[in-house]
Each structure stands twice: as C-alpha cells, then as structure tokens.
Length: 130
Image (tube, rainbow, N blue to C red; front, side, top):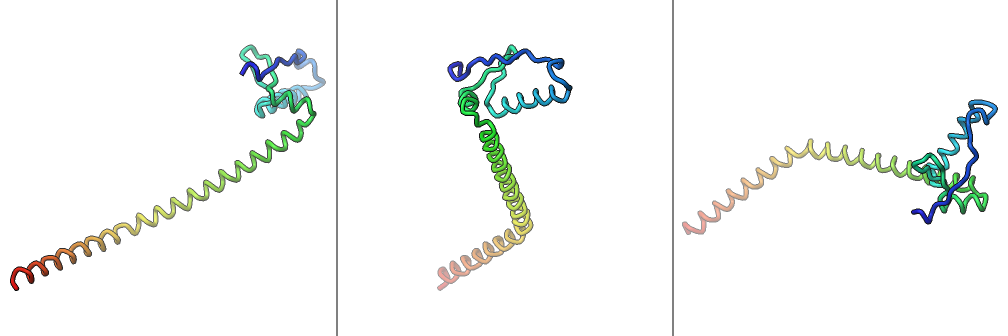
C-alpha cells in the first residue's frame, strides 16, 4: 500500500485563510469528497496523501469526469439495491401466500395418504382371501 501513495504537501489551512466560514467548510467538504472517492488518503497524523488513482486523475486534470463516473456508478448501485429490495418484497409476499395455503395442502396430502392406505389394505385383503 505504501508504494501506491505519495505525500501531498497541502498548505496549512485555518479558518482565517478563507474569507468566510462557508468557504472553509466547503474546502473541508471537498477534501472529504476526494477521500471518499479514494483520490486522497487521510493518514493517522492528519496528513493527506494522494493515491495512485488520485495522482493519475489530477495529473490528467479529469477530476470532474471521474466524479461524474463515480456518481453514475452510485446511481446504478442505488437502482440495483432498489431492484433487489422489490424482488425481496415480492418473494416475501409469495412466501406469505404459500404459508396461507400450506394447511390446505397438508390436509390434501393427509387425505391422499389415507386413501392410499385404504387401497393397500383392500388389495391385501383381496390377495389373501382369494
């Protein structure tokens, strides 16, 4: 993992470096977005390092393209999760309906078993007494 990261010397930043508190918060939010998208890596000592992917993207100046691709992938994942949720919901409804019909099916099976036993006894009777 160490070969995949390189130190980035970001300037020391404090709230006073920005014209407003909103700008500072936006800066922190952007850093968090880059960390979430695996372009930056936060180290234990609060320093930030770029990942190999981060260096490639920043070098080629295609950060917007990368973030758009990440957003599209997240939307696809969300759509897939929604589809899986709908499938699970349909499976649950089917299982509930099956459980409702189970007692009827069980009685039909018992009745069939009883008829089979009666017919077996009848055939044994006919075989023995003929």
